[in-house]
Structures are given as structure tokens and as C-alpha cells.
Image (cartoon, rainbow, N blue to C red; front, side):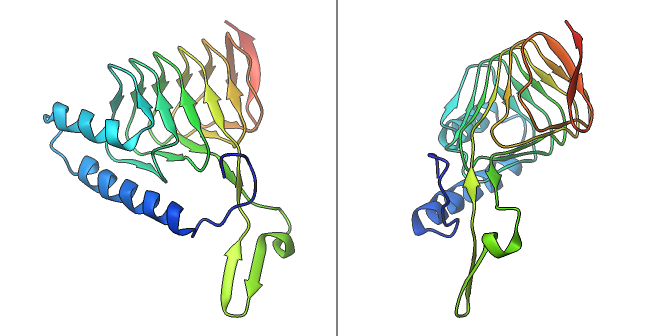
Length: 184
């Protein structure tokens, strides 16, 4: 999966990771916000890496958690969805607005290539590419980041953007599809 090859999302090892993440997310999303030590413990268990000062608002959703690394002082606002079928790496001092979605998984476009039927068993071919977001990045609300995208440092992504391609450092980018509109 992490190599970008097709994988079975119902693989027993992945299901174990999935169920562990669901347990931790249920606990985290229902925890009193004043229990900061407990929140940190859960995020440390959920994520591959969490820098100091990382704050994740609830509710928060992800697939596995173990493929997510977030640098120090990054703020993830409410209702974010990180589908971490591959690595999601977010740098330091980031601002991730509400309802941001980061996707790493993809499927073949042709139905005949993505749907595999063997008797009564149906599977969907899935592959995944990592997403990397640099330092000092602000991603506006309701933005979607596609698999394989790299966003440079010191970038602002306008609200509602659909980021399908890499974004260089030191720019304002926005739209659907997201495009650079200004050097910062």
C-alpha cells in the first residue's frame, strides 16, 4: 500500500489498524476538551508523529492514523478528514481549516478495471500516493487535497480549493482546480 501498489483494503492487517484507529477516534472525539493530557496521549498513539503544540479539534476522522505525521504548532480545525492510506506529512506551524479533506487513495477510472468480482466476493482495486504539506501552510476551509500532491512552504490555499497538482513554495493558490494566483 505504502509503495503505491494496488492493495486490498479488507486485508486483515489493515482491518486491525482500521479498528484500532476507530477505537481511538471514538475516544478522542468524545473526550472533554479540557482533558488536554489525555487528548495528547490519544493523538500520540494514533499518529506516526505529532510535534509539540499540535492541536486537533474534534471531530476528527482518518483511516489508520499511523500514516499521519504533523509538525509542531500545527492546528487542525473541526471536521477534517485525512484518508491516510499512504503517508500524510504536514509541516510545522500549519493552519488546517474546518472540513479540509486530504486523500491519498485512488482507484482506476474504468469500472471494469476497479471492480473485481470473484463469485459472490467483490473487491475494489485501490492504490495510494503520499501527500506532503510544507511548513507555515494555511489551507482554507472545505479544501480537498488529492493523492500525490506536494504543497511547498509558506503557502496559502484559498477556501474551497481542489488541489490536484503540486503547489510551489511562497504562493497564494486557489480555485477548482487550484492554481497559483500570486507570489507571496
